Length: 368
Ligand SMILES: *Cc1c(COP(=O)(O)O)cnc(C)c1O
Image 1 (cartoon, rainbow, N blue to C red):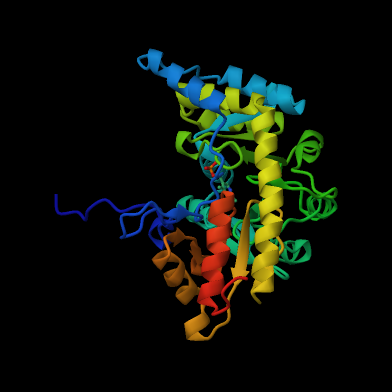
Image 2 (cartoon, helix red, strand yellow; image 1 turned 60 degrees about the horizontal axis):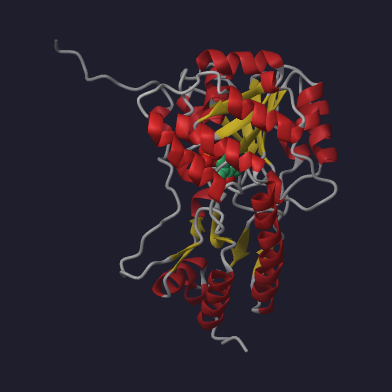
């Protein structure tokens, strides 16, 4: 009777709530939204059709085994469908991995400017977040390894990383795996893998196939344009796929998301168009902003990290305000330890041109 109100498990109140990229402005014009790394080309029209068609059977539970989607993914990448686990976004899969492999007090490592979700899911499971410094905004294998202790259970590496856009080579990933203790799970979060255009990059499929302690996660939210449908997957050693299938909700992937995902993964032309568009405009925006005197971290993904001077009138915060006044929403990244930078997603041609024009104005250098 006179007992205190329910209290959450230890660690949970240390979590700072995740703040997503903004999507609205006070003004009533439609903003240019470059804040959440969504594809400006939208999903494949075939995925939209499949999603709509799923409305005809909304009273039915989805296929709990997610077989059609796992087969489509396996077919596309030449994988073993039994080792694929699906989830409501890769966020859910990452959470399930933390839930399954962290006991209270266990340590999990991620990098200095790594994806914020890792800290949240580690704390949510009573784990201890351990931050490995980056070198020039890149994950640093040596720094990660130097943080390993007997308590380490998971290492999360976003590759390419968000919000820096940098990547590490498959050689570096292999070296990390080789030096990590065998009982440490290496999670390769490859949310932007499809965008990478570097010969020394691999998302990690082969490493997963040849080890029993490495998982690669992928998402339909970025290049496939299905962020609103919530769909992700992981390629796992058989034992880990089995663990994920034991703890996931039996119907964690909706029928509509599944149908859209199958159509999206099969529409390779749409995916290729997104890659081409991004490649072209990533280099254009990078070059233009560099010409304006801004420092742009070289990106392998569909967004850029742009650094601003510390002086107040030219700061990242001031630039963010100015862009908003021009109807452009980008991402502040102070929460990622980057108070002097903004993350900007590559948009449609008109969006990119508007972005460069507005930043030129902000810097007092009207474009030619
Ligand atoms: C966007 C993103 C994800 C994917 O999130 P979903 O839950 O699949 O929408 C995962 N990791 C990183 C680093 C991301 O940027």
